Amino acid sequence: MRIVVDTNVWISELLWKGLPTEILRLAETRHIEISSTTAIVTELERVLEYGRIQKRLDRLQLTRSDVVGFALALMVIVEPIVLPNDISVDPDDDMFITCALAARADYIVSGDQHLLTLGQWQGIQIVTVNDFLSRHFPCKTNK
Image (cartoon, rainbow, N blue to C red; front, side, top):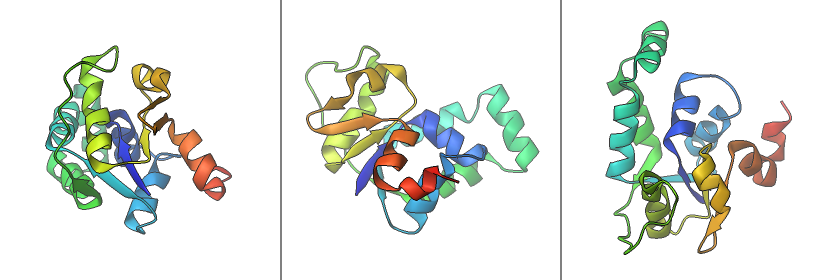
């Protein structure tokens, strides 16, 4: 199963404990494939520079390079599809949709309300971490 992971979920997965880390475990064990683009990686790098995120990295004794390297090891990079019009209310979120279309992903996993409000796009379901895990890996949500 292929998914695209929004930046906010990546940050939660990589720097905090909890349900989002289950997605990393599923990718590590090859139960799912995480598709991404260079634009998504660039956004992840940019968000990792935020002050509060940098403080968390310091507490964990990690560098931005450590985190991005780990994420890249779990990603399959695809070339996004170019669409003629904006899809989401927030055009910055369209990168996740164009990635999912190019990868022929089943899901976009996000915590972003602009994306979640869409619900789906051309058959690609847009869901929260909890919704994704409870639909396909219910044992992961009952810990």
